Length: 167
Length: 149
Image 1 (cartoon, each protein chain N blue to C red):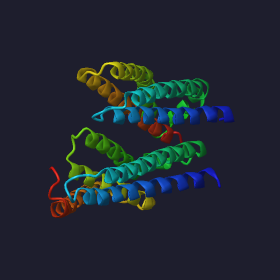
Image 2 (image 1 turned 90 degrees about the horizontal axis):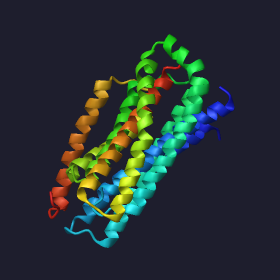
Image 3 (image 1 turned 135 degrees about the horizontal axis):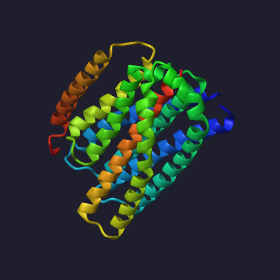
């Protein structure tokens, strides 16, 4: 297996863990908050999901920088100036910033969940569609509209299933 | 580029990346309601070691190779501003980062012995500044590397 294949594998595993972790966190969060309290078992499950997501994030960053080093060394670096690539980097930055704001309680839980969930899927989709060229305003527009839609869906789900949750 | 210079470039990027990851981890632990100060301090000192190692390996690459072989290519290419602005900014900002990490580590150590909200706020802002400068330096590195054609 050469470096490109190794990094691709790491990148895919990182994305799978991140997207899977973000999805399961939402499912577990709604389940855990149904009765208004989070039990120790539910806390353990949530913590495990967060750890899986963090491992995914780390793998994604390491393999991403691996691709950059490989691109620089092999002089296949034209994509370093691609707007789509920078959009993906910005989304990864948003994932990190959102996690910090959630930890600081400066981000409302449902908005934070919507941003994390949408950002992980956006990073996945941009990675899959890296050879397609979409106008940047279109990509950013779809991303922002998706955050709002996911927020509305999550808010509806929380109102229906977690009426005890503090807002 | 010979294999030793290549190794130094790769080490510069990887140690810098792990340095940012370590200080980011320290920050995320510090902003918890009950921070594990030993872990925060350990992680912050790790970032100091990683940033200094990135500094040393980067210094070798920039002194031995970049100035003679890469800089002229960038200046003659389509993106001369990648060197003129981003490289010049990066090399000055990068000097600050290990020292900000030392301040963070010492602050985290002091917090472990005597926690005050003012010091916690100051250390968390110092860590956040270190992270943001680290990300800025990494982003500049990508732009500079992309201009080599």
